[in-house]
Image 1 (cartoon, rainbow, N blue to C red):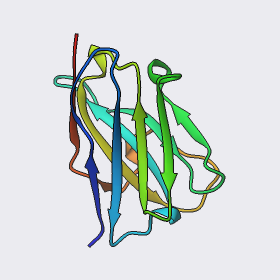
Image 2 (cartoon, rainbow, N blue to C red):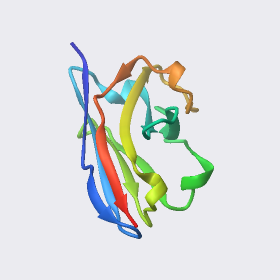
Image 3 (tube, one colour):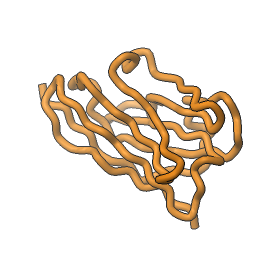
Length: 126
């Protein structure tokens, strides 16, 4: 059964950086569009970033533009989320998700995604 496994979360001070990884098991990620989502306590899940399966087109939540960078390494079957200049409001559980299909676009709507990882906690101290 296909799995997505996130790693790289942790505790970091405000202004610091983390790089999250999303590795696929029994799933070939280059056929999938990948999204990163986050959910803070008491808040709805929001789409942070996504990357297409063709041409590597990306999209970002306005509040992370210029600070976060999504990328994919299909040879390693892994998608990354580089997070710089972290703020306390970035604190959340971060999830990666995948939806099948070679497209030049991607979506930050969690309803579009069928495969989900279990998440990794990111805590930014102020």
